[in-house]
Image: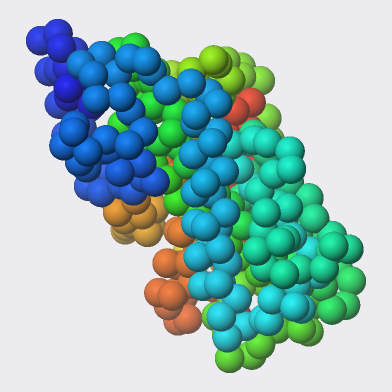
Length: 341
């Protein structure tokens, strides 16, 4: 980024300042170029201005080459010791960074050896909150006894690097990374008692119409392009506490019953805004800050990374309800309440 965006002194200084303030230490990408000398690049042309710049077709070709393999790693880690692949009854794939038909869902049906009659559906182009939407869908599907709904969220955000040094491109390239996460949602009474899990209690979502142009995700001839303005942070700071109250009222849970907060780390400023909105003072959002530090913003898988960390470290002496929330284009805010087992 310093090489591509920092060719003007002011841009380079701005870039360094953003990096120092972003709260991210490591990120991951399927593109090796970001960590290799220029003569070993495989995705970008080894030219000073990256021309010919990778086309949308090339980006989607890389998505098809890498998304299924990364998804399979997450799926096997999720199912190991909990569920045989042959017992999966439903498959939900989630992604906003690659699209094709046949798509990732059919690739995974084939790779997993699932029957051709398996129920499958895809949640596409919803952005960072899509994992919560998938959990809501899986919760509805898992009402039937014997249901085992497999969710896999896979995002290859770094495929969509843009070379114009606009503020939107700077922020997107700074925040976003690649990753995959899987979750298994099963019917009540069909849970391995020895496993770690949570019981989904309810969902709630709101759209903030005045923020619809503050966070967008669109297609262009050179890849997908993000708009992300500071107005998103202002809206979240102003509206988040009210959103929490509405969600808890619908679920019938009091704020004093929440023992852990599973908040999507869209960025450090967003987490800081939520911290202020809810008047936190005791590290309530540390799991979200930790995932942001270790992985950056992976879009839809990120909140599942936070949830897993919470599940592993939940103190059973505290209230055992988890409140989760994620944000995306719209401006859409999706939430869930879960109970630790």
